[in-house]
Length: 133
Length: 414
Image (cartoon, helix red, strand yellow):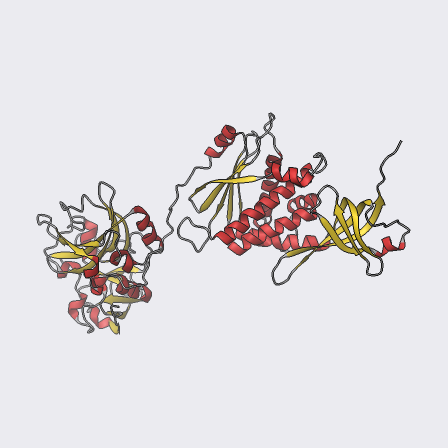
């Protein structure tokens, strides 16, 4: 797999894997568009990440593998009261690593996307956010 | 990159715990250098900064929010200080954070978690006391001390539902008293049950965390030999609890094969004890909880720790139910015959030492066929067979008595 030139050295790390897996990713509106699949680094090129691991993580896409975790975040965090899309990763879709929230064991994964993969093309169903009370 | 605001009146902050993260933490608790705890949730972000909502929490309020006693929405909306803070944290470290005070009633719903969302983490709300200190405390007080610890699975804080908790404690006292009765009934003269109840009484003192714990201190001192009836009773009780666990931990045993240690102890202590122990086991089963016991004793050869797991309590209950059905207990009672009917084969005897103890039941055919004298108001040494019937619905045990022998007692005259 070929990675973008802006990835730091040894990124993705060795403990990542290629696998077939159902994932969910937040969108900014209810359409599946390429701009919803930009990494933190691509969205915020000026933002500094001092540690190598954080820089490498900033080059990945956050996804959940458990739909309940998406709904939980939509309900608990106003920033993420956004639609999400469900997609299917294949072994050729890149490398993934389970990276749960530090004090939970949720299904958060980091997904490093190879340069020749169009991530938005792997997603189809949209999960609408709950309405504010 | 900044995650926390710096150089603001919120203080020098450090993250205590992260509850949600996506790309980065987005719901967390943090604390400043002077100890103030805040809960923070991400409202929005753009190219330059992240916008957060911060709310100060007292320690107790924080424990409730963390353990699911208060939902996240109300954790912010019903802040104790009636204000929250909208905090803008720039990505560039050379830029300053900005904090704006906002009255809680002005918080819009799109700034808040939705109602009904909880953090439900197990949370220590009471101090955890080390079990090693119990031995020294027992020596200081010259009394037995039992730390009775229960983890109620549905409770995230150090809290106990009083009905289950009360049933456990009262049935534990009955068990200890019943063991004491078996040990002391031959040697103690007079009102045996009352004296034994006094000598095996446990008093609740401190509560502590690490589940829900209470320290039970013997109401009476140990003697100069560091011995006491409650100490002897606890020694046997611990043996029994350990024997209960041996059974489940041993491989190749099925529920029909009894553990010898367990059945030996129960058989030695008798039917009345078995009945009390069953009530205790039922309370453990009702609570669906493991019981941890730490014991400090003034006696150098006593004390230690034991655990009665919920599963082993269930197994012990099964075993004890089978044992009681199989083995009726014979009681020798000195009492006054206060009621009797040959036709209906019924009797009633009042214990002369324990007037509150009355035995009513059936007269055995063998006794009716004999020529024994049965006169009301006379004093007899009665032999009574006790069996326990268990209500299949309520699981409440009920003793049944059968009078199998009567021996008239006469005042000795010169």
